Length: 74
Image (spheres, helix red, strand yellow):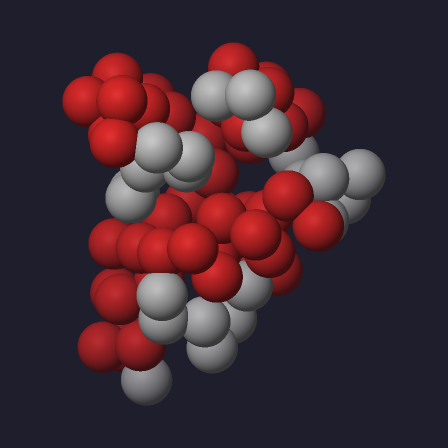
C-alpha cells in the first residue's frame, strides 16, 4: 500500500500538460497538488491519468492545486 501511495505522489509531480510544461513545473506545483492527487486519483498510476483526474475534479480540488492547473493551461 505504501508503494502505491508513493507512486501516486511521484505521478502527481509529473508535468501537467506538455514537454514545455515539464521543464517549468516546480516543487511548489508538486506540493500544491500532492494531497489532491492522493485523495481524488487513488489507484491511477499513469501521469496522464492523474492529470486528467485532477482536471475532472477541478471544482473539488484545493484552490492551490486549481491555480497550478490553470497556470499550465488546464
